[in-house]
Image (cartoon, rainbow, N blue to C red):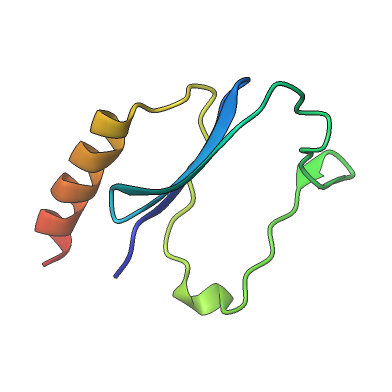
Length: 79
């Protein structure tokens, strides 16, 4: 079980794996970032869709502490 998080904010994009920051890119111009949209539906593609248990989309950027705490709490429940 792994917990992947992407945080897109107006100034940066951050990627976390299991509550730990693994990549960070600062942006001044986000014109090259877009979500693929079709018929007003967000489309997501996965290599193995059976392996995806849950997807959450929020209108708030989570802090590193919030991401780490959620991962720890979810891991305790799952194990």
